[in-house]
Structures are given as C-alpha cells and as structure tokens.
Amino acid sequence: MAGDVEVRTQVLQARLGQLVTLFDDTDRLKGQIESLRGNQTGDVWPDIPSVQEFATRYRAALQDVETRLNDIRDTIDRCRQALADSALSLEQQDAAVEEQLRLLAERLDATPAPAPVVSGRRAGTAF
Image 1: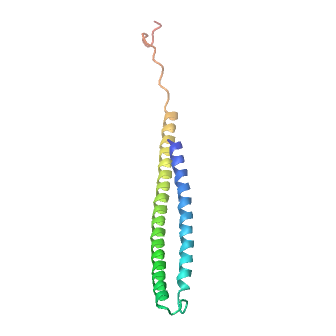
Image 2 (image 1 turned 90 degrees about the horizontal axis):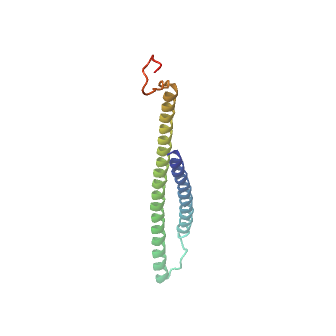
Image 3 (image 1 turned 45 degrees about the vertical axis):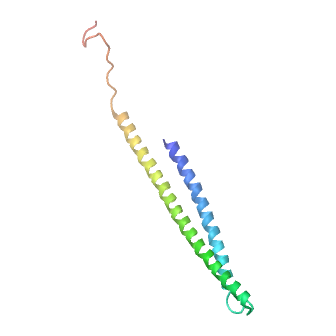
C-alpha cells in the first residue's frame, strides 16, 4: 500500500512541476502581450483609415489574447492547488496508516504468546 501512495505522490509532484512550467510560460507570454499593447499608444500607426481600422482590430485582438491568458493562468493555478492538496492528503493518509500499523505491531509484540495446546492430553497428566 505504501508503495502505491509513493508512486501516486511522485506522479502528482511531477505534474505539479509541469503546471508550474506552464504557468511560467503563460506569465512570459502575458508580459510579451502587455509589451505589444504598450507599444500601441500614440502615433504608431499612420492616419490612414484602413490602417487605423487594422490597428483597432489589432489592439482588440491583443486585449482578447491577454484576457484568455489570464483565464488560462487562473485555471493552471487552480489545478496546481488541487494537485498540491491531493499530494498532501495522500502523504497524510500514508503517515496515518503507517502510525496505525506501528501501533498494531507494538501491541502484537507486547502480547504474550498463548501456551501451545496439545490435543488429546489433559493438563497435569502424562497421558
């Protein structure tokens, strides 16, 4: 049983690492999007109607991507927390079972072994 819990905990720890990496990746992308949006102020685009129309759609697309990245980051963080809670729960369960087994082993060691019963013989007789 303990072997199963250890494997599950190790798998959860590996998945947590992957989620942290994904979170960092989305954080980096969010920074890049924010930088792009920051560069869209002022006279970046020429005052040509079709270009201004494109610039408006571009800014809206950047905002949409940033919003979606925030949603993804929130989801990743919720998953990370759920996995961390699961790993902690498994470790606590493993520790509780180990303690119960230790107490049981102590009781068994402290209990005197019963005297062997020999069938067909009465106590106090040679036959």
